[in-house]
Length: 194
Image (cartoon, rainbow, N blue to C red; front, side, top):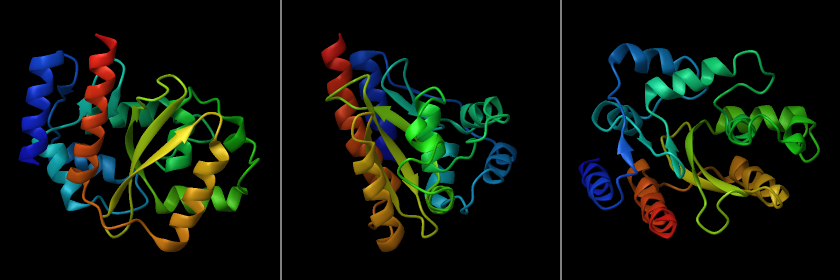
């Protein structure tokens, strides 16, 4: 995680936009864990305790434990309120993604299986099409991580990818590897917006 911490510090100096968040307490991690269907991977706990989160005004929302808890609590009364990938895609779009909410591409059972298999810890706006897509950071029961791209006009592609991952499992990537890739792209977003 030291590499990520160093990378964030460099981004702050250059762009003054990507920032570290509040570090998580043991109590916050314990509370947050109760909202996930999979055990929190050790690497994610280390991230919350040493970095906190990676957030910016526009591009990055890899939530701190505190901010993710706030986000979860704000969505308590909504039908799609879990930390699963499908429900977090819906949250990204202001709780307005009828393709998922009305089960146009997935059954309710498939949606539940995908949500349970792949908890999501946050997202980044995609560089290619800023307000039309996002990349979501997910993990699985084995502690593997991945970033999933979802464009508002290509939701069926994302659905197909998630169904495939449900069968095959996530590739063996670390959180640090996924964050490094996303930070690289986020810097492109931020420099283009300056």
